[in-house]
Image (tube, rainbow, N blue to C red):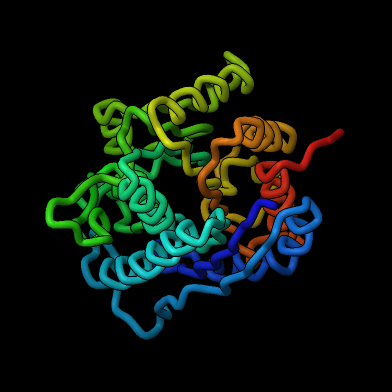
Amino acid sequence: MRKVKIIGVPLDLGQERRGVDMGPSALRFAGLNEQVRSLGIQVQDAGNVTVPIRETHSPGDPHAKYLAEIAEACRVHASWVLKTLEEGCMPLVLGGDHSIAIGTVAGVSQFYRQRGRQIGLIWVDAHADLNTPQTSPSGNVHGMPLACCLGMGPPELTNLFQAPEPVRSVNPRSTVIVGVRNVDAGEGRAALESGLTAYTMRDIDERGLRKVMEEAIAIADRDTAGFAVTLDMDFVDPSEAPGVGTPVRGGATYREAHLVMEMISDTGRMLSFEIVEINPILDVANRTAALGVELALSVLGKKIL
């Protein structure tokens, strides 16, 4: 029997809009645990990583707000992810804003690095998340996590396990962004110069999602132990997922979002799965969290027939 451990990370320090700290509760309320068990998967819920409360801390550096607090939360979270894998369970991570992906990917990467392997990464998102403190227009760390995973961010976030010589969590040539449609100028340069592969919504429109996902999976799975998957719910069009921190029109349809998850599931190569940026304050009757549960079930193996 497959084993999944659910880890909630109710962090909201990475962005300005409040509410994503309630994302893990919204997903659990929508029946995540019970529905995953219905797939014949053994589920453990580890509860939530303790995270700092915004009102008790100062933003600090305006170019990387709440950097120390986010780094500490990600360090703790990364250790939880590492322990989860050591226990033979797959991490199912519930955010929180997207800065938590720094901890998720670092934990998965550390587990496989200790075994002489590298991992791939599929980043499903409307945004590139490739800013750094030097390029970010806002200083919000939730726009920097992919850069940090690639070793391009502040040292507090790029070396969570405090190795003598920092090692990036993932290699750009094994990293893929799917569904991007809102990119800052600095992020655009980083995407082009880093060596990662980015599939925009135009690529999906012109070439079709099936072809894009076949290529994305092949890239993330090439010469790796498998790949981590992180899903920002703003990948989906706001008409289907209104309760997200930074909605962008022109996103994936309901069925396109499911196809992405189903194709990933078919590979049997997913090492971890993460859902982020659900904001119940902005949602309608928990609709976005309910869709998040559906997509988690698809990526964990639920099929139509």
